[in-house]
Length: 174
Image 1 (cartoon, rainbow, N blue to C red):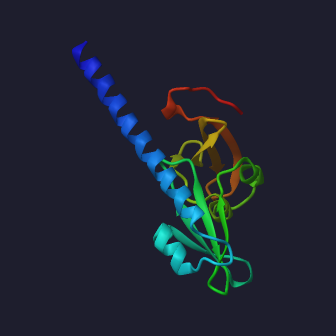
Image 2: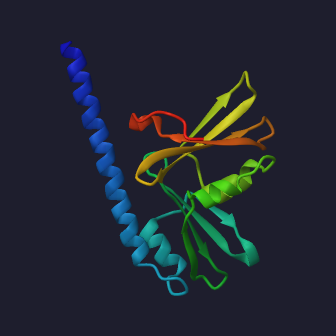
Image 3: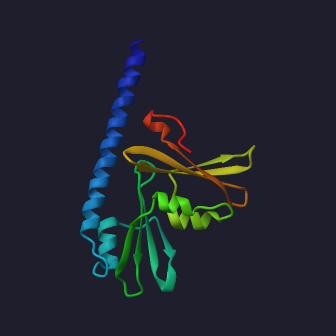
């Protein structure tokens, strides 16, 4: 029993440290966002505040979209658009119900990645011949996971949403 109590305390301390880190990162992100203004902030300003992007996507009309991933511990991913004039034209948090609704059967994986950013986890299911991509997000104060299932050709089969199992709340919501 003594080992069980030590394990529980250790797990609680790890979870508390992770929560503190996530909250600290979220607070830093909000401060960075507040310091960047559309049409004024330059690419250099964005890189100074957010660092090197996870990925740079080609956007419409020659714009570039910088991906800033906060997965697996965070609940957001940011896409920051830099126009051809070198100025920031948009900063979006992309893990939203509106974006999740745009993920439709038949879409290719790269289009989903451009929309949602890098997932927190990728799980292959060899016997089912599927690959699941998971993104952690917040839904009215609950940590949730949005999952996209792809076929072997990386085309969307279906999506699912559930309460984040790491929060110990359990249970599917859709």
